[in-house]
Structures are given as structure tokens and as C-alpha cells.
Amino acid sequence: MISPNPSGGILDGARHLYAVRVYYEDTDLSGITYHANYLRWFERARSDLLRLLGIDQRAAIEGGEGAYALSEVNLKYWRPAKLDDDVVIETRCTELGAASCRMHQIARRGDEMLCEAQLRVGFITLDGRPRRQPAAWRAAFAHFMNQGNPNP
Picture 1 (cartoon, rainbow, N blue to C red):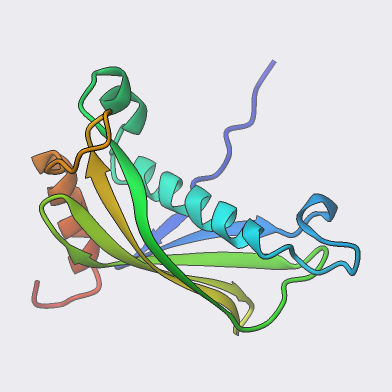
Picture 2: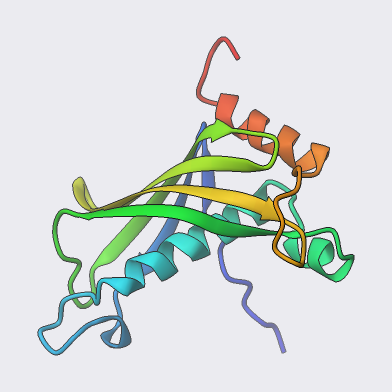
């Protein structure tokens, strides 16, 4: 039997696009997306971006190297997503440091901005201390960030 492999979205220059659909379980009684689900969608998009960049989080965790953890997030809600809407999550890396990176994520329905997030993700040891990101991972992020820049 063939198992479907979930799509990880697509890389489009210096942005990652990840599609989600609003299901009944995502909504409140009024059919509007519950606010915390945007955090889940943004997390899924970031996780699949890492996969597309060749970053193996699981191997890093199992090898005791560390993991990414969200250290800051600021959400702005513009319009509600509703039951059965098709939503695209756009992710950009806006700043890259030795142990962290800043990202900007937007949830859109067509041309309408629904929610946006400004966030910082830090690389930490398994006991929670900040740690430099692996060099290959920083290089992958740097390459991704510069895809939309004609003069990197």
C-alpha cells in the first residue's frame, strides 16, 4: 500500500509557502478559526521549511546536539479565517545570528492578510541553554535568505 507523503510546501526565492485548509476542528462555534491555531500552522510551516533546507531536527535531538525553540513571538490578527478557507503561510527569515534567527510569517487567504507573526527561534541544548546553530544549518538559512537578493 502506498502512503501519501504530506507536502512540505515550496521554496519561492527567499520565502517558503505552505498551504493549509481550515477544518471544522480549527474553528470555534461561529466557524471562525480559533486564534491559537495560527501558532500551530506557523509552526508546521517552519518545521517543513527546515526539512526543505535539509535540516534534520530529529537527528540533532537524538544525537544530543540540540533543538530549535521559539523564544519570542508577536501576533497581529487582521481578518478571521473561516471554515473551509484555503490559507497559505508565507515564511521569511529576516535575520540570522549565531544561535538564533528572526522570522516573519503571514497567513493569507488569497490576497487578504489574516494573521502575521514576528518571531525569534533560538537553537538550544537539550537542557535549555542557548547554543550556536550547526554551521551547515546557518549556511542553509543564509542561502535561503539570499535567494530573493540579486546581490547576496
